Image (tube, rainbow, N blue to C red; front, side, top):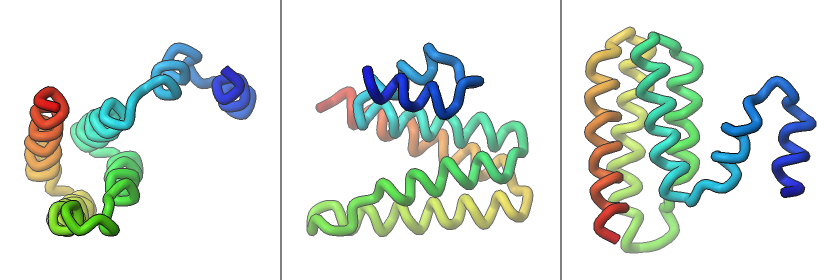
Length: 112
């Protein structure tokens, strides 16, 4: 509960239910939330929010483990492509890619 209080004190205008939801989320749930944020922001043509969410997805990639490295490299290229397309205002392609990736992750998480 200390994390909740600390975060809420730093950002008093944040929705306390959202803060609690994020702090209690699993890693898998956080990945899906990042995709949701990126997709919604892209649909609103919000370049900064979309790119920040995509950057958070990039930062979460695991290049260290041999089994994960090839997948991480492929996702990295897709995420960078999405960021480039956002700068070019090609929103539909970004929404499509991120939505398909989100659904793939949901499927993986549900099967594990």
